[in-house]
View 1 (cartoon, rainbow, N blue to C red):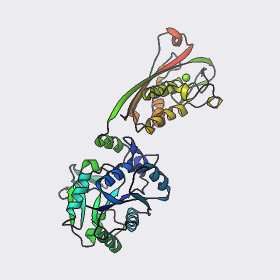
View 2 (view 1 turned 45 degrees about the vertical axis):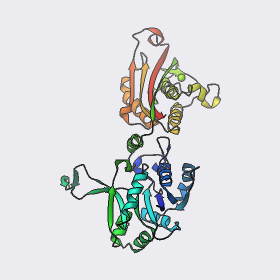
View 3 (view 1 turned 60 degrees about the vertical axis):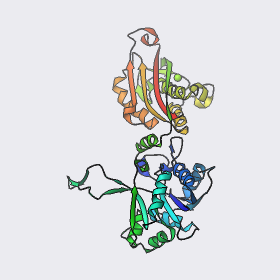
View 4 (view 1 turned 120 degrees about the vertical axis):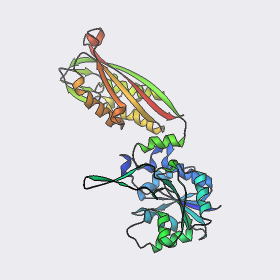
Length: 381
Ligand code: MG
């Protein structure tokens, strides 16, 4: 059946963590927005209107490049305004079904579309809905109470209505407040609503951890990669040393072209190794004067960005520092936190350990400090 579709991608999604809005981030190798755009176009959406903010135009064009059959519309301050802007950009007959979809739900399928279009044979609007399985508790005045979940559903998108009906319903919306749900707008205008089967795969990407679950649900083949790194620097005169991105007061320093942070260097090499991308010297040649005295978090950030650029993620990292002095233990937590911050990972994915070599070898003789690291990554196959 012919249908039109609108993807609302004008939000900023601040709950999904720092960085670009979630619709521009990568999920299993491609931008979040592209997932639903491709799938709606494949299912027959014509036209597909993607509603973006002014700042969203460039990333939307980049995310959708090479895909046919879409156009952009400018979003408003609220979802309802953005939907109406999308509706205004569609030039098809009033009876044509239109699906309104949130960009943050990337895993829509042709089956979802078929169910919605079928439901419109008898209803004025349709939406996928999932029964609530968890017990719901409400907290007020420091006390909690159970909210009966009978009759409660989780509303998902796409939501469907015929174009003319949906335009009229939005025009007639009298509040209270702004609607957040297209089917509710039609219902408020006297329309009859049908529920189609919801699907965990229609989950909305809201929090950082949702991306990981969505990647599993996307079923995109990911492969696990492991890399290891080793580095050593010589002790020399100084008053402080940088290790794992933390400055420690000490009666010596490590000598090197950059800040000689062997922990960060070993970890950077581990990530580059997992990617098969050579070593730190290939990316930041020690002969290049611009890296003289450089803070080594720059190198680690670069390696982490290479993982992200491939649509991958770092599963966990583990660093071992090998030295007699300084004592590492008092600084271990600060080092973990610093690495977690640089890599944008939860703390429990980051480990820093230390050992002496009981006086043996170059670390034992305190000629230098060594570090080794492993990194485990997942990247699209
Ligand atoms: Mg080094």
